[in-house]
Length: 379
Image (tube, rainbow, N blue to C red; front, top):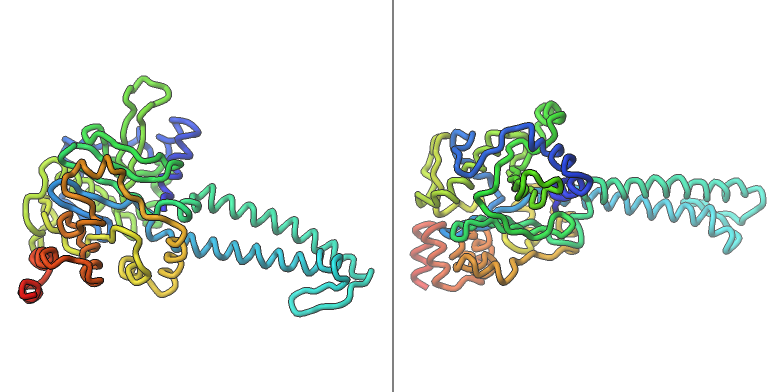
C-alpha cells in the first residue's frame, strides 16, 4: 500500500507549497548524506529489509500493516452498499415489478396504503447512497485506500553502493518509478505538518523515514525534480530516535558499507557499524507472501491475515526493470536470495525445498546453526 506516497503526490499536484507543508520540509533540519546524523547509534527495525549485500540495501515502503485494515473497512462499506440496495429493492422496486413489498423477513401484497413505504424506499436510497458515495470517496480517494488494491503489492527502495543511486518502485499516480542520486537526498525525521506534532506525540502515531530530493534548480517555481521517498520505520508508536537511527544505518551503509559480520550480542546504543549478515528478524519476504507468511510478519490475530490475503489477490509483485537489475551485478532477491542477503526469502525457499544444496550450505553458514550446517554439508 502507498498511503503516504499517495498523500504527498496529491498535495504536490495542488502546489509546490502544499507538498512542502505536508512534510514541514522548510520548518525542520534536513540531514545531508555527508553529515553525522542525529542518532546516538544505528537502528534496524524488524520486517522492513528485503535484502542487504555488498552492492545494495533494499528496504520496504510503509503501509504493509495498514492494508488489512483498509480491506476490512472496504468490505464493511461494500456490505453496507449491498444491504442498502436490497432494502431499496424490497421497498421501492419490487412492488412495481411484482405487486408485493418486502422488508427483511416481512412480505405482503402491495396496497395503495403502502405508498408511503415505496416513497420511503426511494428516499432511503437517495440518502444512504449519498452517504456511501461519500465514504467511498473519502476512503479510496481522500485517504488513499485505492493503493491497497489492483496495483503493486509493496514499494521497493534500493540503495546501490556501486552506482551511488537510489532506485524506487511505486505506482505512477504516487510518483512512479524513479532513480535518485544518493548525494542529493536529505533525511526528514518528522515527516508531518508542524501543526500536527502535538497530536503525533500525544497519540504516539508511528512515522516513517522520509528522504527529500530537492529541486534541481532552487529558483525554479515549478520545482522540477522535487520528490520524497518514504521508508518503513516498522515501529508501532512514534519513535523519533528510531527514525533517526534508521537514517544513520542507511547513511553508514552507503558511505562506508558493511564493517562487521554480525551485530554483536548486547550491542550498546551507540553501536554504529553495519553488519554484513542481518538476522532474519529484520528481514521481510520479497515476493507475494502466503497467508502463513502474512501471519508471521504481521504477528497478528487470525482475521487480519485473511484481509491481507484478500487485498493481495488483487495486486502484483513489482519487479525491477531489466535495465536496473544489471546495475548491482549480484542479482535479484527473488532469484538469488542467499547471495543477495534476502534472509526471509531464503528461509521460505528453504522450507519449500527451492534452495540448491550449495545455497543451503551458504545459508546455514551465515544464518543457521552449527548442527544445521553439518547436516547441509553432509547431503
